[in-house]
Length: 598
Image 1 (tube, rainbow, N blue to C red):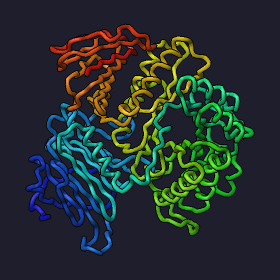
Image 2 (image 1 turned 30 degrees about the vertical axis):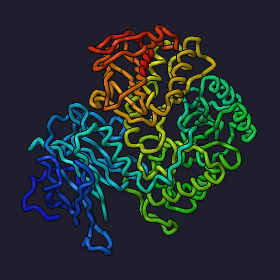
Image 3 (image 1 turned 90 degrees about the horizontal axis):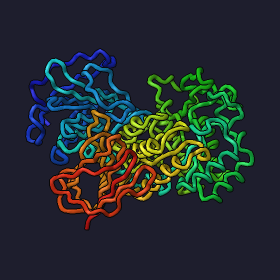
Image 4 (image 1 turned 45 degrees about the vertical axis):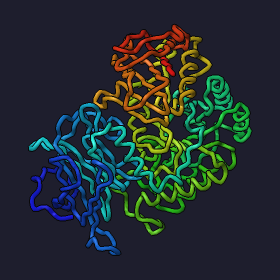
């Protein structure tokens, strides 16, 4: 690809690392990209057209000659006119919305923190420009160039870098899904997601916190099974009798609060419930027996938590962690693990490894750690589940997990919704779980329904005392868990089209095989025509807004309408309605409208 002779002016970069490579302009004529898009590359550059509006840019350090190792810093930078832009999307918690300035601090991604992907979204939810990089370890910046009104993106790393840039102006959800499909190339055979990972689950965390006992777990498992919760995830507290929080007791992972563990797990299995156990993977606490052996292999100090983050570059650390975690499945018969706090391995400036380390980078150590753990787990239980959590959403971790959970947002339905959608858009084949749902004992049934509607496009996790639910609360929970289970394929595997990321996704649509499911979180009209090109035989509308007047637009012909309230009680059944010219139907808060036609 020929170098262009002139390029855009340089932008002030107060956060740039020392020695940042200076990219040179690269011509993109004839590739069908939007007018005004400028590409600059530091390193030997190659550009190819992948599809209409989608290009792949490769930068290599060193000479760029075939057979020669790619060394040194590389950077890919591009700018596009910032016209009709509404929001900047990233997978980071609270990362979507405002347009940053080009001089803003860049995001540093790694195997354990974040993912190198973003999108500039425009009016109509189109992707003005979306991108993904093939390297987990990267520095990525983006923002408005104040001097020109352009939006600048850049990605930087060492050696070799490939970036896909999508300027197709399709729905941004579709553009991101196809970038995730690109990530999945070559990884699909290594990723396994059992059906159980997509079914609603119960978690002990908000309900019990550290007050974990066999009796309490078995009681909630039995009550949850009646409601359609087929998995229980036992969180912090099982490995200690201390109830003062903190992580000083992590590292030994002995079941002090779950005596006779295998028999306890067997009793849960007799209920028809699968069992996952929580581990704070990186932490070795100062009160653990493992402290003397491993405490000096510290990657980072977490003294305020009573622990250190241990360094996976050391074989002794990895061997200990793998043995401790695999034991849950191999010895106690668990059905999987909740692997927490992996993002704490994402230390920006790790210490120089000592002579006992067998790899240079933390990411290399994590691959060895997770690979060894997955092999042990799979050998004992091929259908086992492994939960990871936002923000460790890198595609490099896909082979080591079956699901990703939205990061903690107790009693935050809007946050839960946004975090699920943000993660879903780039999670590839993995299931995406909600943060655990909790509510005040006085919460009305309608609001409980709204909590569930907000997490419909993920896998609901519930964490309240199920024995303390009132009749109406229980009915609402049972109804919406039943809806989630009945429409799993559409909600979790269908084409996902969230609207208005700048407003926190006030409406979300999923479509699969003639079924379209819309969740309405604000008083917006619902497209009853062919939303996103999807013709429907069944259209479901969940109403989480206080306004019960659901307006259907762009429809045609007739359909049979059924309306249910937040508790699943039928208010109208198989009523013939005409869709031409628009129609308004009454759907109460927390209720469900179902339209069917031949």
